[in-house]
Length: 402
Image 1 (cartoon, rainbow, N blue to C red):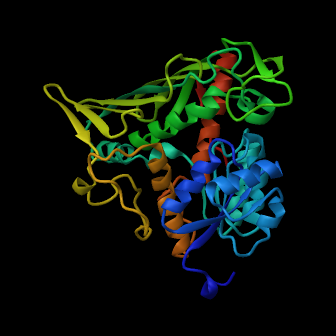
Image 2: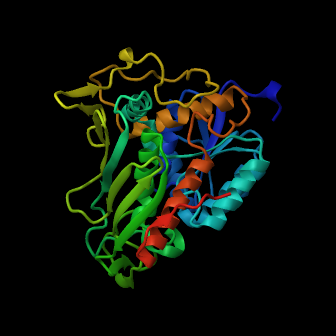
């Protein structure tokens, strides 16, 4: 499509309508830059039902049809993990801009191949590391970068869920052939890892990990896995090799230490993502289930900062470099009007769509206003090191990809 004939709004398609796909549809619309014109799935009846429910005009099971549509500018890939590299590579080869759910791949070879495909492309490509989209996560990054904590000493926290806490709970992520060799760490631990590096501004150099599978056999519905825990009907027992829980020690560049606890089997913990940083002067803490607040503690004072757009004139978490134009979408809600996970996803997408709408070239390394595929590959480095550490029982360095 020529630049002179480009419509005022971009046109997007979403591939995959499991848990996350409909949330992408909603977030795309609320960026103010794009319309969702197609959804793609593997079952025609289900994808048509999704299209009707979401008000999307077109539903198809033919990915090639969407890849070949010159009117579509951006494609979101929200499919099971094992398909990410193949579909994302095809999206870039078709000349489309790419938004990819994490993980970018299930192994180092796949991540390497995808980074090479992105390097050959002239298109924007991002990975949906949603927690960077929270305003208070970006503000925490700004506070740390300003040196307000003093010398960084400790980064700790975790990500706890309970949706796989019982033997009858099953999901395709349990199958390493679909989800990859790591489950708890690969699925949610990578979100915590990315946020820890994003907020601290410091990279993890090495890990010492212990993994546990407390439910070695699970029950699933006969006929295949579901998006989330299985319901009724005929059941079959299947062995489980991926981890339910991970306890991880971390060493950061510069000498800081860290701990992370990751679990998908903690009863009553729905989405308990916490991040706490301690420096020589002050500590900072954020919890996803109370996302509007940051707690800043010093030797003689504890302060609770609450999200207030009027108090922050610019995005405090955006990296240095060229700024994308402001979004035409709905503004941030005023203080006292809570924003949550769906808003974070929208805000994550906004600078990506603004850059595409402005016909800007893909950003250079370190200048991206959104998480790139290289940021996603960093998660693969983390998972690989955790698995090796747990297997060999020793500290393991993160080895760069590419």
